[in-house]
Amino acid sequence: MELRPLGNTGLNLSCVGFGASPLGNVFGDVPEEVAIASVRLAFQSGINFFDTSPYYGGTVSEKVLGKALKALGAPRNEYIVSTKCGRYKEGFDFSAERVTRSIEESLQRLQLDYVDILQCHDIEFGSLDQIVNETIPALQKLKEAGKTRFIGITGLPLSIFTYVLDRVPPGSVDVILSYCHYCINDSTLEDLIPYLKSKGVGIINASPLSMGLLTESGPPQWHPASPELKSACQAAAACCKKKGKNISKLAMQYSLLNKDITTVLVGIKSVEQVEQNVAAATELAISGIDQEALSEVETILNHVKNQTWPSGIQKN
Ligand code: NAD
Image 1 (cartoon, rainbow, N blue to C red):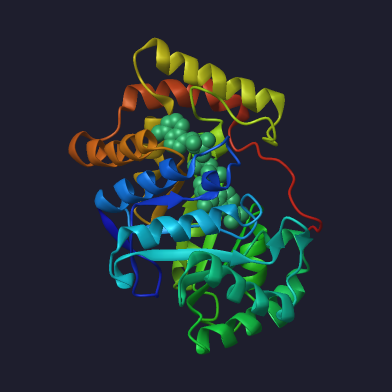
Image 2 (tube, protein in one colour; image 1 turned 90 degrees about the horizontal axis):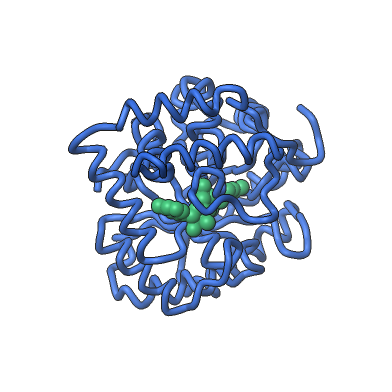
C-alpha cells in the first residue's frame, strides 16, 4: 500500500485510510468480531491510518476500534489513530473545558496513551471564532502535554477551512479532514488544494463513496443528499453494474488518483470491504483507472456535479 506524507507532520499515511464510523453501527449493525477482523485485515494489508470520533455510535466506534487495535498486538508507532472532539451524541461543545475532558475519555475508550491526530469535529456547527480563539489553543496545550501529536479540523463547507487557517498562528492546525468533496459527483476540494499546500496543511479526503451514494446498495436513510442527486448516483451505479463494473471501485480509484490528497478515508464495515478497497488501490497502481467507465459515470452525473447539501449553523 502506497504511503503519502501528511502536510508538514512527518507522518506517512496509507493512501487508503480506515474510516471507523461504521464500527459505531451508523451504516447498519457490525458485530464486534467482524469489526476486529476487519481492522486486523486492514492493518495486515498495509492500511496504517484509522479514524474515529466519540460521536460515532455514541462512543461505540471508539470502544470497538480500541479493542481491535489492541488485538493487533502491534507496536504503537506502526499505526496512526485520529479521533475528534466537540461533537457528541448529546450535541456540540467546543469549549476548552469540554475538549480537554474529551481527549481523556477518548484515550480511555481507545485504550491508548495518545492519539496521533485530534480534530475538532464538524466545526460549522459551532462558532468559528471560538474554534480559533479557544478550541485550537486548548488543543495546543493537549499537544504539549503529549495527548495528541497533531491537530486538525473537520467539516463539510469548504469555507470553514480558510476561515480558521487564515486566523490561527501558522503551524497550529496540522491537518484538515474534508468529506464528500472529492468524489466523482463532487470535486470542489480540488480548488482548495493549492492553498492548503501553501500552508503545509495535510489533506484527508473522507467519504470517497459520498457516504454510500456511490455504492450499488445506495445510501442509508439519513443521507442528506437531494432526491435528484440520490437518483443520479443510483443510475450511475446501475449503469456500471450492467457492464460488470463496480461504482465503488471506480469511486475509490477516482479519489486515489490525486496524489496531493494524502489519504482516501473510506468507511469500512466488513472484511470484504477491506479486500475491495485495498484491491481498488492495488489495481489502480497496476492498470490505471477504467477511463471508459469513468467517462460514462461522469456523463450520468453531469447535471448534479458539485451539488451538495447544507450543514452547520452559520454562514461565512
Ligand atoms: P464513505 O463514502 O466512505 O461510505 C461508507 C459506506 O460505504 C459504508 O456504508 C460502507 O460500508 C460502504 N462501503 C465501503 N467500502 C465499500 C465498497 N468497496 N463497496 C461498497 N460499499 C462500500 O463514507 P463515510 O463512512 O461517511 O466516510 C468515511 C470515513 O471518513 C468515516 O468513517 C469517518 O471516519 C470519516 N468522516 C469524517 C467526517 C467528519 O469528520 N466530519 C465526515 C464524514 C466521514
